[in-house]
Picture 1 (cartoon, rainbow, N blue to C red):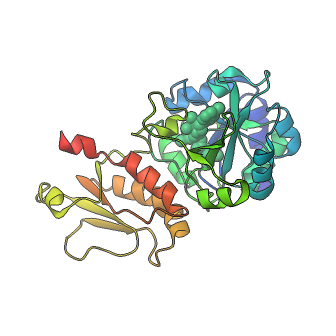
Picture 2: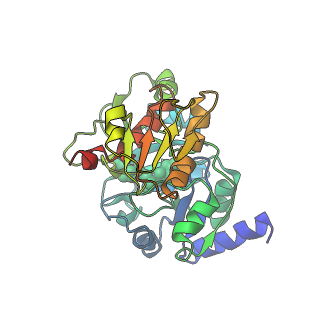
Length: 322
Ligand code: TXA
Ligand code: MG
């Protein structure tokens, strides 16, 4: 099948109420017609995702957007002009027609125009916005290759479009415009600094809210099955004795300890490269029957903010201390 034939087939499936995994520049998504509540419900079933966790609706044009949202604040328009297509999701007040299942009953909808050409072609050819979370079982690391999707959800989706490895590698940045001030709900593929250079100060959503607005904000999320310890001390590690420990290093390897396996995110210490490698490296470590993964912090600037956010959520330090 050629690429065009695959996209055509995928679009036919979407129009018929099926679900398709497709590449975006951030991570692979699991998509359905956003206006077909039954198709959207299947996404929740396949992912075992709780229904209170709303989806991002992907668009390919301004016309798609007008079907979803009522009015767009000027700061949101400036961000779209600057960063779309790209790894930025905006939360805006929704039109009534947008099915409640896609937004978990909220009065708002999360929208994004992805940059991957296959994603854009799929949305255009389907002729409708596509609701899509990341194509992983709920709570697990997001997929950055078609094989990652095949491994975990291969039997449950109608088609997987293979667009190669994702260029950005962490999910989109989410900014909400439903409060008085723009609010960062999730750090991601566009750095906060870049966003603030366009619209000025953005409030940063707090993790300690009683009920998180974006469940991607739940403290424990994006988690491999192997326990992860962020910046463990030598004593922490000593408690693991002879067990198998893997290292997720930022750019250089700790010479004092012996590891069963090492993944280096970016030899040259480049945060973009590190973000692109993060989920693949976590998956490889998770597949190596280790007792513990030791993860090193990265500088919390630019894309480092998204990397640290995912590492903190993936780390199971509380369990280790029990
Ligand atoms: O890069 C990405 O954003 C990828 C690709 C596939 O586009 N998608 C992705 O989707 O990461 P997902 O479902 O894994 O994460 C979407 C996040 C969730 O944490 C959800 O709670 C939040 O967006 N969200 C969706 N709609 C929302 C809304 N109306 N208000 C607040 N948060 C919302
Ligand atoms: Mg996700």
